Image (tube, rainbow, N blue to C red; front, side, top):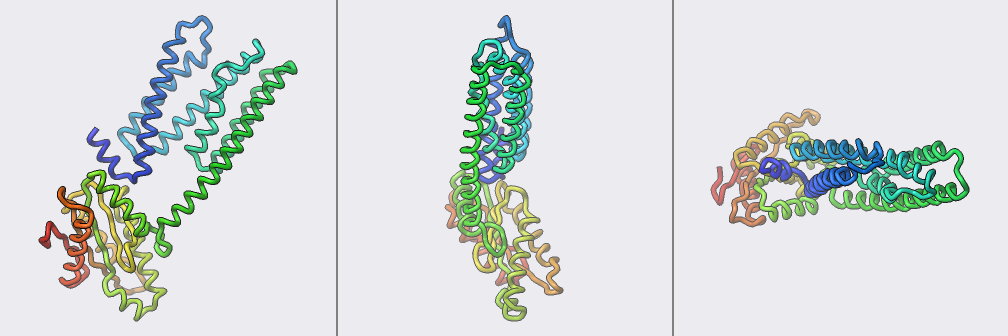
Length: 350
C-alpha cells in the first residue's frame, strides 16, 4: 500500500482522482458481477450471457484493478479495458435477453436501462469525437441485431424498438453536446494554465500544484532555475533569440525530469521545478543533470548557462519558507560564479 501511495504521489491531482475513481469502480464491478452471478446461478433458465459473462467480468475487473494498483500510471488503459468489457456485455445481453424477451413476451427485459449507460461511459472515458463515433457505431450494431432477431416483428414490437432506439439516439445527442462543452472548457482551462511562449505551465498553475502538494503533506523539493546573463543575450542577439532560449529551457525541463515532476515558467527568465518524493541529494543530482543539458544545448553556437537553487521541504516549514530557501540557494549560485547548482538547508548553503 505504501508503494502504491508513493507512486500515486508522483501523479498530478486530476490523474490521482481518476485512479481512485477507476479503482473504486472496478472493485464495485467485481462485487456487482460476483453478487449477480451468485444470486442467479441456480435459476432454471439462466442465460449463457449471465452464466459465463458475469464471472468473466469479475475476473477481468479483478486483474485490471490489480494492475492499476501496481501501476497507477496505467489508469487510461484500465478505463478503456473496463469500458470495453462493459460495452460488450451490454450488447450481448441486449441480443440474448432483451430482444428475445421482446420476441417471446412483447416486453423488453429488465436489463435494458443499462444500455444508455454505455454512451455515458464513452464520453467519460474517450475523447469527445471518439465517444461520438463509438456511440453511433454501438447503436447501429444494436439496430442491426434488432432487425436480424425480430424478422417477423408485430406492429407493437416495432413501435417498442423504434421508441427505444430513438430515445437512445436523442440521449447520445445530448451527451455529445455536453461533451463538446466540456472539451471547450478544458481547452480554455489549459490556455489559462499554460505559458504562451514556452508551452509549459505558467505561474498560476504551478502555484496550485505547490499549494496542493504542501497541503497533502507530501515530501517535495524545489529547483529554481535562472538563465545566466539573460539581459545581455537579449541585448546582443535580440529578443527573438531570447525567446528561443526560453523555449529551449522549457524543452530541457520537460525532457530531463521524471514523470510526475512539475515544471513551470515562474517569470521572465526564471523557471521552477516541483520534485516529489525525492531527497535534497537526489534533487541536486537532477538539478545538475538539467544544468549540463542546458550547457550542451545547441543554439547556433551560442553557449547558454543557468544557475540553479535547490531546497527540500522540512516538516516545520510552510510553502513560503521553502520557496525563500530555494531563492536564497539560487542567489548563492549566482554569487559563486553562475553555471552551477547550490542548495540551502534551513539557512545553510551547500
